[in-house]
Length: 321
Image (cartoon, rainbow, N blue to C red; front, side):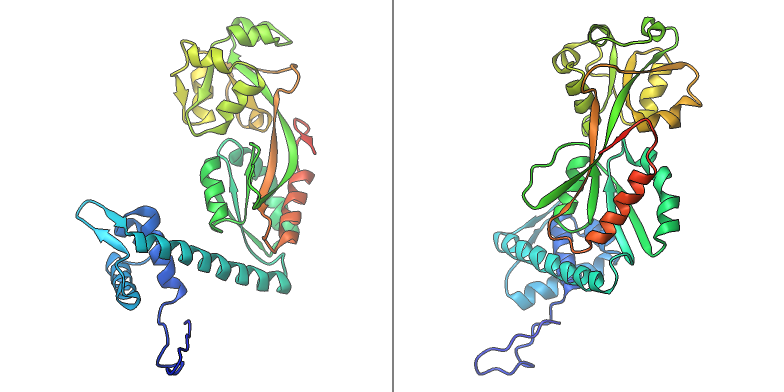
């Protein structure tokens, strides 16, 4: 409860009855543009959420949302109030985190985000060692695209993110962890499968399959291998896959070649007998994985413990930084 005293009015009479839960409902409706989806996000029924929003509007004396059968639009007054509500929620979260950091930074939830082309291959290496060495840290993992993770990081919905693209934001810090080289995957009957060393000219002529839009790995692969313009104009420009698993199945079926990050090799090499993997020997054909977090995040020791576990359990296929 937030108490506000006015001139000539007692603290009890001037008490404002909004609470942090109401503000979370408010932000959820603004984010989703839908009362039902907002209720699902907040784990309450839609009537409960709608009722609280209505009470909040009555208490503030302004209309926060315009409701129709098809959509929910935030009013100009609502936009300003939602922005302030987000700041209040961020500060409340910071207070909780700060109190926890003074108790024990290695106790409690650590909300970590990771991109889909990294998480399935890195997490199996570190989950058990993390639990064994720091049993009081409860890892909460989100696997999403880079832009979504950065948005959630800015909103304090996660504490840090494992990314493979540079981040230019004064509110965030980046801690480089390791360099991950790319390997070429091609069908076993492909001409490149017979080569022990892949040259730039080989990549220039190869039918390269890439991940769908949203995956930063596709852009990274094109950039480091200097194939950006050729692939966009090539016959395979529109042939994209949603996951590395699908890409490997396409390669195995003879549709073309693709580029794999080193950590993914172990997951595929044992079962994909129809695929030949060859490491690229070209300069700078790797991506850099970093831990990105808010500068204001108070539990630095928890992040240090997490990165320590990562660096202690990396395979020889990548280079720690």
